[in-house]
Image 1 (tube, one colour):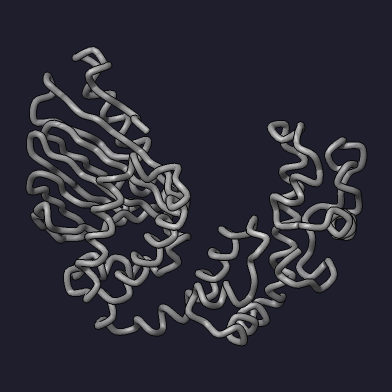
Image 2: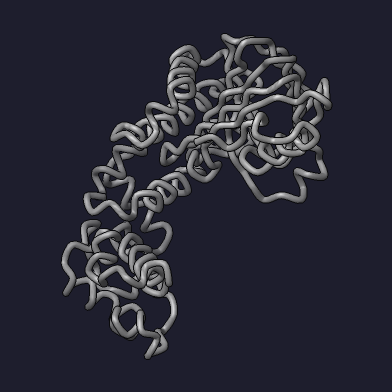
Length: 332
C-alpha cells in the first residue's frame, strides 16, 4: 500500500510529509534532508501477518532517533533492513558502519540511532514486533553488531530481499501469512546464531522460552487447529517440556488457551463493530467449533450467557481466574 508519494504534495510541505510518514510507520525519528527544498520520496507498507514490509525511497535523508525520543516512546519493533542502490550509514550504541546494497542490517527501533542514505537512496525493511520475536533485547543488540558472522546470514538476506522487492505482488496472497511467519522464524534463528559465541546465550534462551511460547499461543489463538504438538514443534520443544512450562506458571496449556479465547470472544461480543456478527460466528472465529460448548464455557467463566453479555443486560463477573473453567484440550 502506498503511504506517501511526495509528487502528490506541494513542494513546501514535502519535507514534513516524509518526516511524518517515517515516524508514524517506522519509528519516531527526526528527519533531515540534503536538500530540504527538493525532497522527493515514496513510502510503501505491506502486511504479512506476523511481519510488515516498509519500503522507503527518497532523496538524501537522515533519520535520527534521539535518546529523548527513545525514552518517551513505548513502541518496540525489530527490523531487518536492506540498503538499496547506494551505501547507507548507521550509528548506534557506539557503533558506526557503512552498509552497501549487499548488506543486511538488524535494527532495534526502540533505541537511539542515526541512519543516513545519499541522494536517490532507499531502505527496504521487514519489521517484527519484539514480543513476537521472543528473544532478550541484550541478545538482539549483541547480534546486531556481529550479524555477518551467522552461517545463515546470506539465506536470511536473500529472504528479506525477495519479500521486500516483491511485496506488492505477494501481499494479500495465500502465501503472505506463511511468509510473515517464516520471517519471524528466520530472524529468530539469525539472532541466536549471530550471538551464540557470547556468554550467557543458553541461559538467556532458557529464561525466555516461556515468553516465546506464550507469544506464539497468543498469536495463534484464533486457529481451531492449535494443538500441543503444533505449539511444541514451532518452538523447538517436546510436548512434555511444553506442559512443564505451563505447570511452572501455575496453569495448564489447555486452560490458558481456553481462558484467552473466552476473553477474546467476550471483547468481540461487546464490540460495536461486530454487533451484526452472529454469536456462533464470533465463537468460531476464536476456535470454538461447538456453539453449545462455547456457551457453557462462557457462562462458567463470566456468569452470564454470550447473548446477555452482548445485550449488556447482565453484568458479567470479570475476567476468568486461571483455571476457572473446566479442563479441556487445545481444540475447543
